Length: 260
Image (cartoon, rainbow, N blue to C red):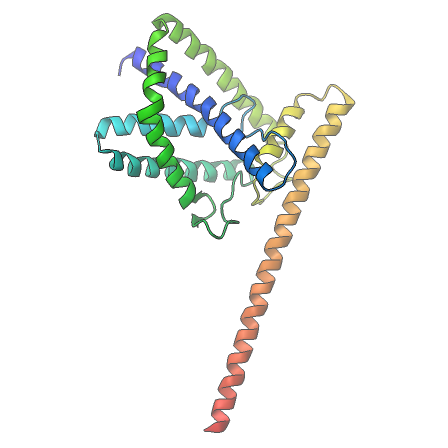
């Protein structure tokens, strides 16, 4: 791979990271509105900037690997499903180990088969469908757009975006590390709330911004406590049901022995 080809792939990564951020934020906003929540833009993503690296990584990996294997469309679909699922699973695992909180959790939807709440059948199939759309419909236009940029300006743009991206990662990690102990062991999607807290972390120059940061953290703790409470109630109910079933079975066995 030449230097110019590497620059192009890096530019594809940033483009799809931004497109993924727009898609996920709009989708979650509309979905929350359909469920009856008040209309509020769901600022998704881990970083400050309007990009989600998992989308960029998934798109680049899918485009690169499907280009190597040259499979029919259904082969591309299966490969993209596998790639997207692996990236999503291990991203969830790494981020939970780093920040002690689950950034997304599919286990609450009983009608959506999932693996440890990190990946789900519906989402993985969505990766496949979206990946086919990107490869056959969207990527040719993006390729033409990137090729239209002079080579020297492509290099400058990628260098600038990379510097901003690295600074964004460092600043976000510093801010997020301040709440990881407060959210230890959480299994509830707090992406928007954590993003709100992180943005306010660097805006503590006024009393109002400090108040917003405290309120955001308080709200996250409340969500965590409610989730833990629900989990404990569900476990307690399951144990009680199991105990009743055992008691009923023992009673029936005793009656059967008396009859004999």
